[in-house]
Length: 430
Image (cartoon, rainbow, N blue to C red; front, side):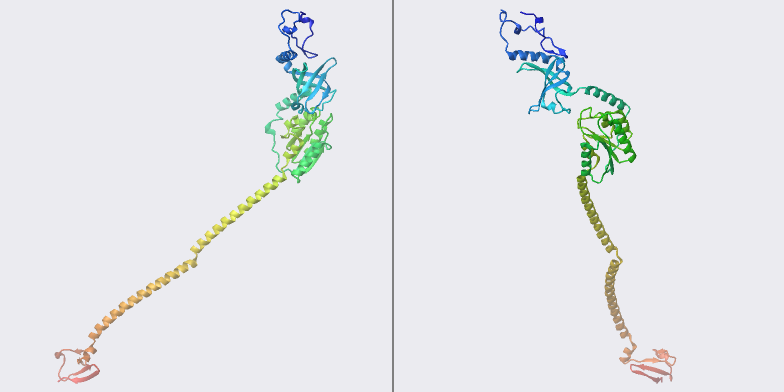
């Protein structure tokens, strides 16, 4: 039986890593003439055996492979099939649909990329291939390291401190925008602002947003807006690769943005993109359109809120009127109760009652007095001398006017005045 050195190195990955399986001395390497042969392996068993070996090697389950894309295929399933090659070798690759959808760079044959994935065996054809889960254009790794370095530096200086973040004004009158005037991002922001809040005035400070000159132009555009003193500033652009967005990772741009006298909303790229500008700004939006939406209120919401406020005001006024009407009626009742006219009416009623009582009292008193007078009259009548005289009696009066009621009061020859019931006459005493 041939020795292990007589066979090629199984599982060899050109320019990356070499897996040597010399330690495996399975019967599948035996010859038919070997008396120790027990059975023949199927092709599927061989492929499955090799797949297990590859998947057991930790080095092959976390690979970064650099190469040039060739034989790129995009079937209707959405998966990507391609080959990575260098000057001497090639490696078959597969990227499933859910991972492929996250790639922002336009892939094409000849593009140099850095791919990450795990090495496995496609058992049906017996070929090993790289199952890619992430891929980026070659060079993005260095840019990402520079991004992390600058992010750490500025964060240590306090440029990302939440205490620096200012609230976004709820009713901005003027909004400054820093972006490319020819880009779709500006048109989206302008349309969104006009649709949501037509009262706002837009101040465009144009700048390129990509290329070597972009950082300087962005700084100049910001400085122009600082002199105009808008209520709010929007800065942003549409999506792209990390190289396309690199102007917004510039240190000078970050420091200029940190000096802004007014709040800033950053809307750079897509939702998964993050730039230094996003961290320095007072508010980060996932897209330029979202930045415009966060900058102003929605007139539909304002109209709805205004209607609700109007209804609350109407209910409040109605309730206030009802309360005041109840209080007025209560006060009117109290006034009526305390009114002099009411007291006068009560006094009149009281006077009528007293008058009636006085009348009844006077009548009783007069009746009693009349009865007393009649009694006195009866008594006086009984004692009246004239009544006695009418019964045949007479009253004698001496010349000095004294009444003679005894014999010894009269003298012989004295003249007496005799009073009878119908007159008087003189008599001489014998």
